[in-house]
Length: 508
Image (cartoon, rainbow, N blue to C red; front, side):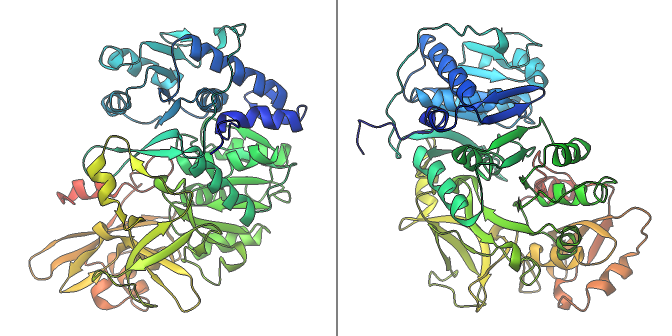
């Protein structure tokens, strides 16, 4: 790659400001920044980082909720060839400390909700420069950082250079840092722009956490590339979201199914003008058909995607027009992504046969941070092994069955919880459902379902079994059913089955 041209993320603000300097780039809690203003702030911050010793290959961490400073940190770090480390805002102090030590970040930006925790772990992390984004705790105040530092030139980054370090939560052991290159990020955005009508007049609502790859690279960075406006909100708040959707005529947003469901059940759902919304992308899990129909009733089509941190993140996409016809499917590969299913015996799976999803493409990462064995185990002859089990139908659509490790064997039959959960979610009155395998003396393992009912709905265990009896084989119907008030979830709404298993004394 030519060393004469900087192809990295850090050049994006400058390039965008050259083309559309006066267009609004970001809005956040009363702060409105044009692309020219944003580029100037990024240049100033990168100079400040450089004068504090940050250079190519160094790590700069951000630990906090959505904030304009997160995006400025990302672009400023990569502008000088450093690697940005985005840390989940909801991590406990010990969990964040592990990531900050493992990545050896020399600078840490943190939000107001993390200020107390930073005080607890400061002595145990390598970062000797601490910056308080909200100015409420210890460390330098972000708003007071000098803007008159002598400018420093951009570092020429190739598409193969590392840009971002994002740690996968995993279900066992310590999290692993996926090293995403400038090319991984860029080509994911190319896929998004090919498959979606993102325009220069885009108004993208960013409420899903930006410290997760889907929240950041699902629509926000593609919108930035096109010169649209990104409305940043700290966290998911349906009331605030509906206000923004109507007042700012939001055209696009990324959500997880739990967000979409929460919005659909909010009193403002039927009172808000949704006519400007032309793109909703949902990831993290299949969206129940009933939820799709509720949104379709308001004239909004929902696209669904499947991806991982390691793939930056898009792998599969279910087009909005297929949402109901192929409800439950993850769709087909993105334009520049190839996908195959590998059966347990190592051969390519035939239509209808379960296999592991493996993928290759310019959006797929190359390595885990300092984890050579884990990296080697993650690839099969160059194909990334996702660990997800799926089938492909005769039309070429992929259907996720579950994580291979989530599968349980009941009476010699393989059961994939995602299939059972889909059937449960199609029962009117069931708001949420999760299924795990639990030990059983007779069958080895049986399914246990955790169910959250909609308000004022009352079901017995037998009511549930009867309702799914037409959709599931007998061995797939959960033998145990527990009604719960709420499910344990991550900050993006993903279900934490590890907590459900721990509650049952099941380790997997």
